[in-house]
Image 1 (cartoon, rainbow, N blue to C red):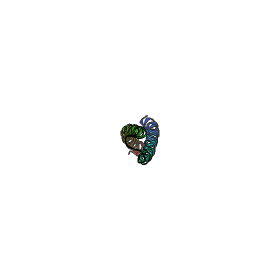
Image 2 (cartoon, rainbow, N blue to C red):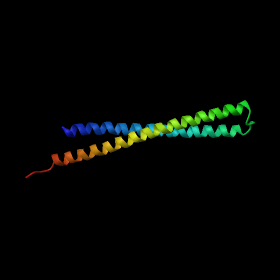
Image 3 (cartoon, one colour):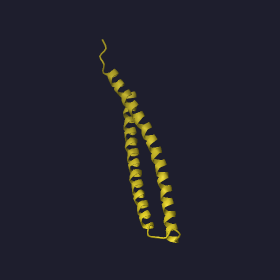
Image 4 (cartoon, rainbow, N blue to C red):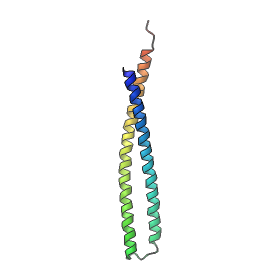
Length: 109
């Protein structure tokens, strides 16, 4: 019975690992995009007087982007921890399955 449950669990964990890796990749891509946007805002801001309303609006937008990047970093860290746990459980299931197969197909005299 352990063979069947471990096989099913391995499939579930493999899917979960792939899903988490995809989410981490999406967050990384989004963070890179936000960094580019923030850089563009900085370049645009060099043309304005530091006390102008436009400059203050740009600074507010930069702060919002920075906060969003921090939230994405926290979410990425959470996904990374989940990924590590899923990979550890996957390795455990694979090892257990190997030992079950070895035990099942060993010849006893």
